[in-house]
Image (cartoon, rainbow, N blue to C red):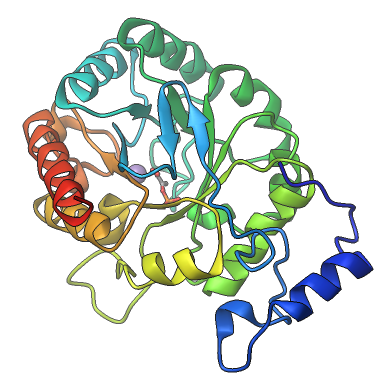
Length: 300
Ligand code: PEP
Ligand code: MN
């Protein structure tokens, strides 16, 4: 467990950072502005425990489920399908950050008990998004992991509140955020005393509308050098097309990702949000199998 004072620097820490630095190696630069997230300062990999899952311990963890919680039957069907396909955690947004205020905004607080029921039925821990500081406590009462979305990566009051959530945080990369900005966002959570932060690459904006975003898989091996925090990949928002999600999941694990978060809907064509990128339960099953094979091939 990392503990630190708000100002974050002690003479001891500064001298340790300086002593471990070598020229020409950006991973050991003493000037790295993120201190608690730094692998130089804390070389031991962080392992986040959620239920039976160990994220960062080796074998990749798969989080799957619909973009949004739509109703009780849908989220329970999704949870059972996710479990049958071999996923380890269930995702589902109750609070949805939508580009248009006219689009479905999610069920909000009413979605939380539905997630709790889906967990009770399936045994899968829950990952769900929180969008504002005032909602951290009620969401944390139900969620096993709190997701902070791409659009909120630099919502600093939210990051600080997440530091007191008492739950692991899945911190998505802002769609125009540099790696350094992202690690500094994680630093806000860590410095409030919550050591369980997972980073999640979900694609950045590019010039090319062929895919929804440009999934930056180079960040996976780079982050493994820069930080001890687990790194997840979200290929669903990364590409925005269900037909590319499995290939990019395999690629993410080959690049060293500690896990995946993918959008799966029991009836993809009926999904209220992000239908184009929702994979079927059958595709999820194939994805889990192939990801496992790739991991085994690379680590045996
Ligand atoms: C989501 O997970 O459904 C979501 C809105 O993700 P992002 O913040 O990456 O856009
Ligand atoms: Mn989505």
